[in-house]
Image 1 (tube, rainbow, N blue to C red):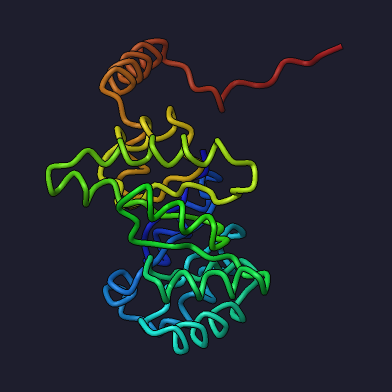
Image 2: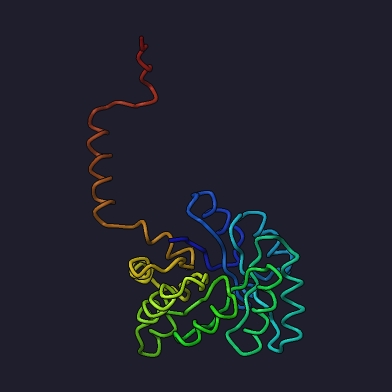
Length: 226
């Protein structure tokens, strides 16, 4: 499974990229507004930091303007994935941009039927929102399972399932078990994936036991070999 970070915070992106665990970035208008930066400049900087796909979302909702915005955003860098909403106009833009060789991330997916349409429109990614479905009393992970199952039935579908609106490590682990290709999550959730109370407890024991030896690894000369 590939890990994307869902943020427009450049400092967070740089920090996570340094771990080698980051495969891409997703942004949206809300995240960009929170960053308080010029949108196009920010996307360009992110693309310089991350080699993988960087989703940049159009702001318009009508076909003509969305297409113009999508083509403009695609010129920022080769790894830009133009993000469009799952609407009739958005799917039409997706097909046009995909035919032109541009990666497209179709967002705001809430049903398997919508996911089928996105795949047929040539989307590189489909973004089903698990957390928002959970918020209204539905099981968002069920949607992931449905989409993965459907896509696996058709070799012509090359769209990757990009699990979005991830709220916790369970969303990530269960989506991975189902075979989802990508999970995009806030920086906090990526860091939570590595947390476990027994890891902390075991490390504390090792540190304590090592201190009792009175040794320092770096103060010891390396033995001569051969």
